[in-house]
Image 1 (cartoon, rainbow, N blue to C red):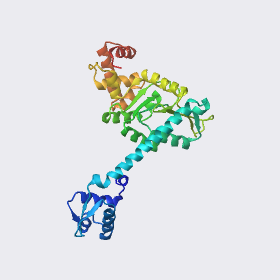
Image 2: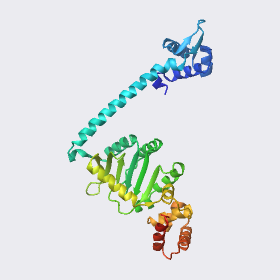
Image 3: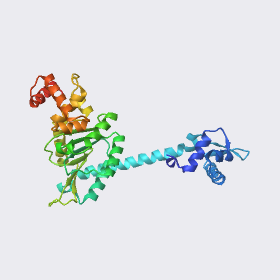
Length: 327
């Protein structure tokens, strides 16, 4: 922040101290900051020359100029620069949209050869996320990296929502669901996972403006590349497909389950989570491991749910759960 106001680190420390005092001497500043007297004196001289600090008539006493007076011009300049940058960004965006409307099909899809290029483009897209990030994950077709985890965290801090559609087999062999459920307790609904069988492909969609689809070359070589799909009818179709699959997928994250079960408070939240995981196709053992329960506890609670719903089989329980709004 100090750099944005045109002050280096030591200048900022000196000015902050002087702002907190009615008046001081260089010796006072040296004693407070514990920097060499020669360095502090040089900094004070620079700040005096820039009218950020005022030297009194006795030559030894100094005080800070009012911040609005001393730094207001710098702030105004920065705001002007930001407005100019935003105007340039808007102009470039309009040029891009105009060009996109006249692109050929070939211009709407780019090819990224190799994992390094894929990861670089993915990180670039994640850092510019503003609203929503859609992901489908399948066994052997994910793009997770440590750098990607950091970018995902920064996106969540900016308020970006993340919706993940996962294959059942992937969830049973991945810590993804556990980590999302844990974060859901702190930030409900920020990241949601739903489970569905038969996902056609792994895919990442950024703000519904671009998608990255990993593609493994023929022969199963490990050097996965990807397609980048830009705005246009193909991307619109991919997003529509995601929304359709999402609406019919199984809810497994607590805040998502609760949202879907509004008005049905008669079911214990843990029972609702057990039911959602088993209904999504997870085994009793896998569901128990996800929830920190034994397989026998899962089986007992499923039996209790059948008694509560008046059903005899798990198939009947699934139908009754849908009718009652438990799922």
